[in-house]
Length: 271
Image (tube, rainbow, N blue to C red):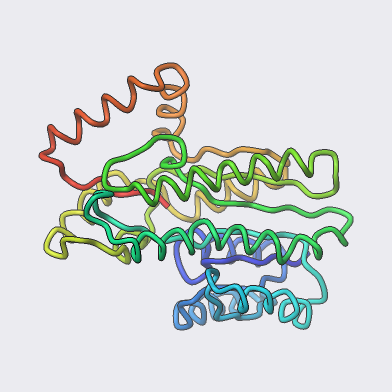
């Protein structure tokens, strides 16, 4: 089998690529971070994995439209697509510039849309195929200082559910993943309005990020094998999902009160 993994330079993307290689898949590694991409590729090669490296910006339409041909040239076909690439942005909606918001939405949402559109024709050619779109806990509940992030991840959820419905009964499965606190570099690499607050932002994230990317990757591949439409990773995701269903307004009120009690301290997004 051949898999395409975006955001493969670090975090869940890297762990997913490495696990796929260990399970015998060929993997096309995709990321804008060329150095991180090479590090992932080297680890995969040490495990005797067949990999190709594609330094591509998932928000760039011409680059994404050229990507399938490059992957086919390297591997012949595509069976699995993991739309995993994502970024974070800390600040209130009032504080953030439109340029910063557009930057995040282009990667987190348009990267998923472009990945789906350009690879779907290739996936149609396979006897069995699967698309994984990574949303977030913040695609279930709205969080302060994460308006654009939440908007993008809610949209990934809607895109995935619509796609699943359209492809239901076909040879292509779709899974939408909602991770909670995963130990990745998403907060370290986030754009922030207040640079002085960035260290405390990372400290807060590290307190809640208890799950390893490797555990997340194993859960994701398990969901693909079972053809699950939806995967929640981490206990906090399950708890908040159920609370949101039971008390949709109450949960947002509670979050607002907690944010005020913390003197409007930044809440960092899970990947």
